[in-house]
Image (cartoon, rainbow, N blue to C red; front, side):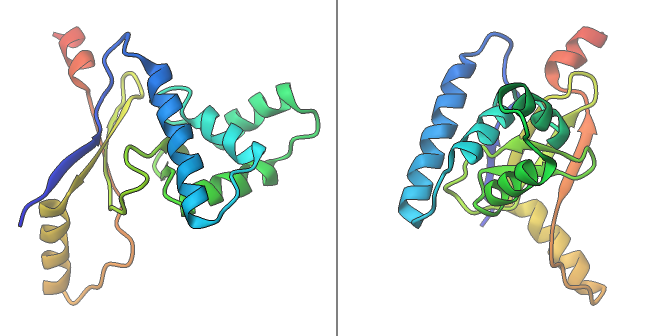
Length: 165
């Protein structure tokens, strides 16, 4: 059965971004409560900084903002928070950019495919089982077992494509 879901579409200019941020933080609180985990102040703040836009954010950019707020913030603090958030499915690491984005559906375990606009930096997140199945079948035919699947596709979002015309 084919299941294709857009977990986080490209956002239109002027959308109510505060709603995205509020929803992400509420989801994180709920998820941690259900799982018996602590969403510490620093974890919450790092998640908030990741969700400040729909563009990937680098760990050192997060660190710079934390240092503005809290003297003495250090890289291990940010990386521990990001590791926790990633392990709990609240953020994803875009490996080709060495940056992080908020997860569109953190309460739903999934394997994402990312569309990354190289012009504006926006990222859309999909979960398409047909793509996963084709890759799995092709890998299996070659005797290869997939341990970790990360698909990142770079191109132009609709807004940037329209501007280029």
